[in-house]
View (cartoon, rainbow, N blue to C red):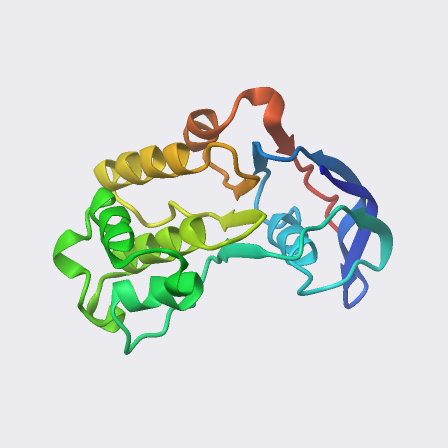
Length: 197
């Protein structure tokens, strides 16, 4: 079932961030949200995840099970990369599968290290694997490739492309090259900049 965003508005302290915004997110496809900084991309994600509620308008068809990668890391720092993924998969995914996924994005040598000892880019990759392996009906990735070097970004893009098949994936990026790699242009949602005060 598609997610329908109908004339959604959201303001903070009287400042509009979303104004009568509408869009449709098709089921089992990748949708990319593009737009300049401050146009409400992250706010829209928070509404879709139920972390906030719109001031006006409706969002219909939201799934119950959602996994996400936020711009700020939300890993359990004392736990290993493997254990962080296990937190969301439980026993439904084998240890071997988790290790295989982590290896696919260059973390085979860091699987048992506490994530607090990993670099920011490595932690981001753990977060991506965790979101992709979770039992969810919607995967939300907010600037998932931010801070990754060019070679790592290519491998992580390839990983996300391969694991997203048949899933409902929503990716926020401001990078056109990333968007082109993830979804055809007609699957992009371009959010307009709001007028300055």
